[in-house]
Length: 175
Image (cartoon, rainbow, N blue to C red; front, side, top):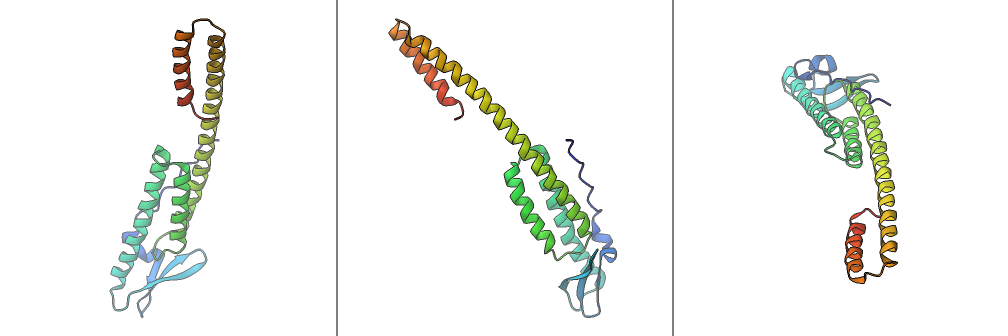
């Protein structure tokens, strides 16, 4: 199954906070979502444009965090297990975020990353299974060689070869 491409992040909202939120007369900051408005903070006495810019920069920080996680996952520098726990943490952060920006776009990107983590887990599982089969085959070959040596009469050379076989056995993954 091909990896779905991640939706591109909404452009940084530092200049367009008015589209995603508002500040009322008392300084309460709201973000617009599909469900309606949600209060995300309060900044009494501040310039509404500056207040929205501040909350928009906090949104940009979330976008950066999701971008970083996605890059690390796609490059393989983070394990699927670590990415899954980081994804869970970011999802909680987004759900409770006190930011002004396109939260639905962030949720969509998190869903895409969830699929990617699951695919990475399956890929890693298949690789482990393949290594296990190769290890089993190699251990069977070592055991056959050891049995052949045990049937021989050259005990000194046989003992040295058995030590070598034992060392190779120990290097292989456990079954």
